[in-house]
Image (cartoon, rainbow, N blue to C red; front, side):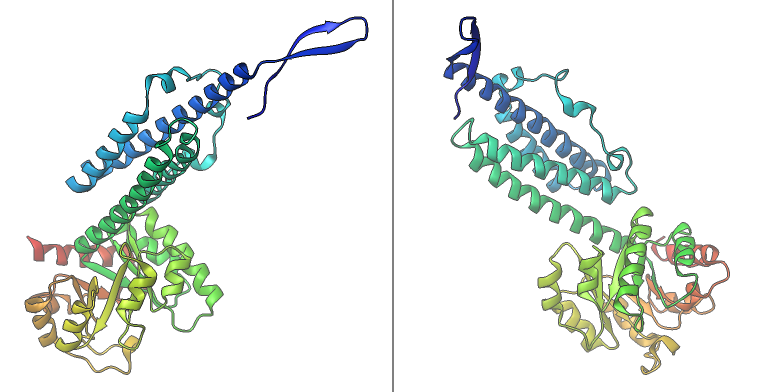
Length: 368
């Protein structure tokens, strides 16, 4: 540690500054600075965790997540000693006057939670390093707490996605359209909560650009965005998951790349494929094509019989898909479907909001 040079007198004869070394003064000053840093970051971490905890409590009603938030806050309180609190100097803290435009607004619940997780994690890292100057065990303790926060984030974000997946009854799969974004937003306004971006022919630059815009749009409405086929694109745009066909990579490999917090869907056309997808850990499956459709021109329709089989045997969410529209949706519902996926019925609709509302209302009746 460097020693403090304290100017105490001026020698007039030779005009030289005479200094006296006061190492204890420097040590005390450094200690106070460390205490202020610890105090600020303990406050920051506790506040961020409380914001996350409130959503786990009132938004998700998840006792396990609430309990972990409380446990972390209690450990933070244990380290927030009186001597650390005594070093607080709010009026002299330049940071209280600094702000960033992104801190002044939140566009979605996901954005709010992610911002506070980042806040907590950054504070934990600061506490881990500066804590080593305060107590021999503090650095180690906050390293472990930081890992617990990472696990909490994974669990919470994964739980939110799975919860919204289970609630979603209407799934819109996109096809290339000049009005793609306005159509999707209109459907979101009508109650859509699950969107899959699918474009087999666009180049990667355009896919990335469109997927980014859709992710921002979906999340602003509290909806999930799934990417068709491309695990790399799903990761690149921070989508909520990926949908795989029978010829795409195995679910196990996709899970290694995506982790457990993101969703993986699988297309199935028969009972054997359905059971295999469930056994391999798919979060949901597509069941179809129920009717012939140009979006699956090379696949024959499986009919309503497979819909009934899925209704009786699937242990995970499933969506009837393929040629479903306003004219036949009630037949699909009567066969046992509680969730459906559509493409043209909304993408090509003159009034996407009204069509979406109609589908949602018809499907909602299956849960009454």
